[in-house]
Length: 112
Image 1 (cartoon, one colour):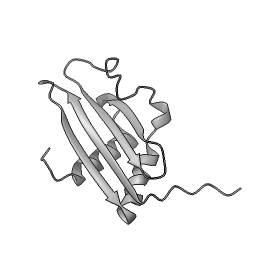
Image 2: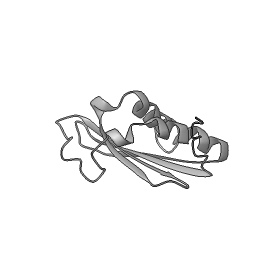
Image 3: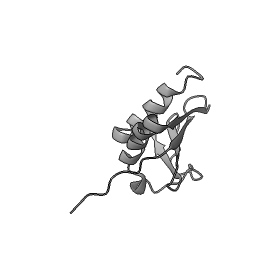
């Protein structure tokens, strides 16, 4: 049986927002990629367990805890539906951490 090949997007945009923490401040990072760079970023997006993340970006009340970060992740990929997830800091590991770190390092607008 032939496996389905991943979608090769012409453009992808991913935004990551970190909320919470001691001061309760939000910080946001964005990256937009096209062509070959889009394929690399799309691969990171595909590795994340979106289906397992049952919370949506509008419902962060369940995951807020004192002095902890919450990550809001939004991916827009040409040819596929948008994806959104709320990822508590404790769950920001593996594929989530790889995607978050890639977006943060690609966005040159502000330092960490």
